Length: 329
Image (cartoon, rainbow, N blue to C red; front, side, top):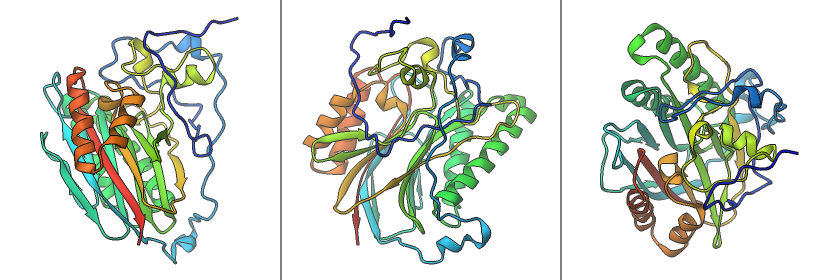
């Protein structure tokens, strides 16, 4: 019997089992992040069966987008975000989209978000594949999302699939952009209501009362091993191969289809959400993130406190944080 691997300081992260989605194409091998120092354990993973497919929005029909004719976009969003290089990295490979606002350069100051009604998208993207390739990949992802004609699970999925093919092809044709790719996580408001989405290990959390719940599932070697009972959930930075991604947008020499995880959100009262890259979650444990989000009454103060906590912990990666509140209008 295999004994679960343990790491010092590990603690269980809170989960929302109703909203967690587990999906990956069985064709997808590991997509190592540029920061990973070791290769993924491919031989060990061969014995692990592929996970089940995710729940989909049954009403999202391709033919004429019939289900999108009567949009439900009556949700306002407010909050704040910060996108920063961190203490160690020389370049910022993270990007962020907040409605019509893009992150451009690393900033020490938070930027406010205020959108009165949909459609809108708030999303973060973490580039992989080296300084230039990673930065360009994450920017292509947020630009592509900003051009989404309809903010629905179907449209988001189609755009991310096209971006995946484009980044794979560019990385193959342009040596300086080899293995360019990115993760993405976000919340959309549009013709199918509210939903979260992700590819890779950037995350969306929800604060309900004083409890923080991770709504997205990481596409990573670590998460696969946790699902199989071979690894205990580890808070903070992941060693070696555990940082390798099993899926990203691009990041390969050949085009392999991705599986976009979509998570419907049901909101009856104003609710706070956190969208972030792993520059935060590798540095700050979930319990501390939760304490900050509960303690800070404003999104600006919460985003600033989370950023400062990650920097004090080492700031070894780019840090992107968006703290938002969504409410019906």
